[in-house]
Length: 62
Image (cartoon, rainbow, N blue to C red; front, side):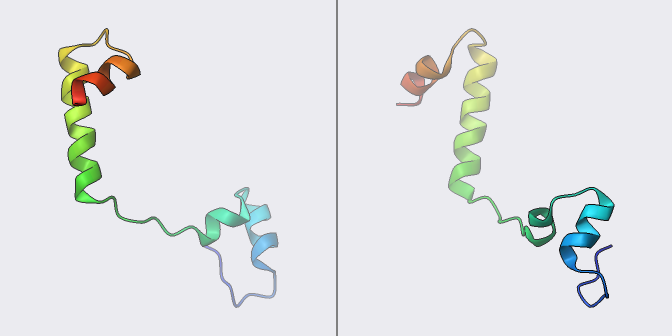
């Protein structure tokens, strides 16, 4: 919706739309496979031990 070539500045266009200017320039980066594997492993552990906190889950990962 934002046109960099328009007469209004990008900041003004973002303000009119109610979004931050940094959101206009944000480009999401892909998540590495190693991070995805770790997140899935943490999810499985959390489902198996729902009472476990971050410290216990860290210990279970080792």
